[in-house]
Image (cartoon, rainbow, N blue to C red):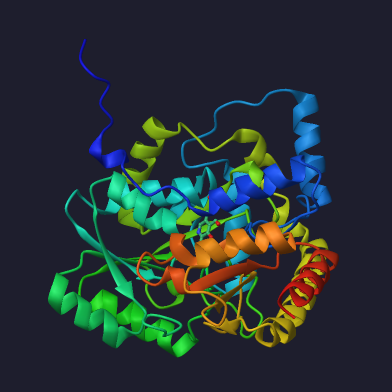
Amino acid sequence: LSPILVSRRSEVEPFHAMDVLARANALRAAGRSVVSLAVGQPSDPAPRIVREAAARALADGAIGYTDALGRAELRQAICGHYRDHYGLDVPADRVVVTTGSSAGFNLAFLAMFDPGDKVAITVPGYPAYRNIMKALGIEVVEIDLEGAAWLTAEVLERVHREEGLKGLLFASPANPTGAVIPVNELKALVEAAKQMGIRTISDEIYHRLCYTADDVTALAFDDDVTVINSFSKYYCMTGWRIGWMIAPQRLVRAIERIQQSLYISAPDLSQIAAARAFDATSELEAVRERYLANRAMLADALPKLGFAFAAPMDGAFYAYCDVTRHSNDSMAFAAKMLDEAGVAATPGRDFDPFEGNRYMRFSYAGSNDDIAEAIRRLTGWLG
Ligand SMILES: Cc1ncc(COP(=O)(O)O)c(C=O)c1O
């Protein structure tokens, strides 16, 4: 009998943060109270009108496949969002509805790159970028930001000279740092990439959660950028697995072909529900206000507790902190903090394979009470 072989492409890093979550769940199961600032998802449910639309569709019963590119009314609603929020006219035939932004990455990478192509991402950054690309045989070029909050056009130009990049992927606001690329820097970055023939993907999943500036989409500077977005974060719909892309016209048919075979379509029920999400602004802005209050609490408390901010808390719902005043091993420190203080946060290793041992990410997507309690516990533990 031949041994069961596991493909080399599947040898991507596990999510180390899951170890912290598993430990937090085990402690909870054993009766301990744990406050979690570990997960990057809103604690609120999807907006009421979204859930009502889903309930009506369920009662009607006909939930089927949709066009591979998505339901027409959702694609139109997404165009409406680009008009209202960014003042941009995006034709509906460039909108692709996806199974969360996660599927959007898969589709974009497959449609845009071939095995062996070099695609740059920034470090620290969201780990799935690296893992999906590796699994697809794309050569990932990790640009270490070395303490800078965002990637500049100059750094991209230098890396391109050394590496010969085919692609670039960045997020603003970013995970894990929350940093937002200022508009002039974003314009320079997108234009530099275009000039060098580098194809750009802009992950805009944390748009509408920027606290220091208005949202600007990379599409404003180059119609050929592939934009990835999702209903998971601002719209509080993580578990619905629904997102979208704005694709350059010449990529749409390729993406459609791949979507047909990989996913057939994004989930119909979630598409029906998500079409209402842009009408839930007052409910969602109330959630955002809560993040703002959480952010203010952490902005005040974390430095006093010896956690130095490694990036400005401009957006998303994360504080990324240097923890070296307490430890040089953030994995061990996170485990100790969880065991002794009952507070869970995410060690930096998933986001930064080089220097992640120095950092931790605190999510403030939870309730005001959770943040206040976490601060109380950490103050007692460290003070
Ligand atoms: C930067 C970033 N992009 C994409 C995702 C994936 O989101 P989803 O697949 O739920 O749309 C996440 C989730 O945490 C994220 O932080």
